[in-house]
Length: 113
Image (cartoon, rainbow, N blue to C red):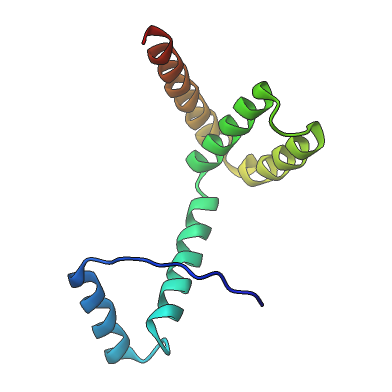
């Protein structure tokens, strides 16, 4: 497996808290393992959030309008997103409507500048 090197700065208090947790529990062998697991967990949470799925859908639709991706790429991503949001249609509809309103507001504000 290839690894990317990422530099992250933490507030000293957070770093101390992580170090103390690692020392007290021994669950993770080092800070790097702890941070990788925290990132994986947070990413899973975000990917299962219907509001985030709706936001991603809006971004894809905006890209489709700009034609920055091929039809096949967009269709594949839309299919994947559709599968992710099918479970909670009402929440998705609300999130999409809110995202559309935000997008319209942003576009309207930009056009006035």
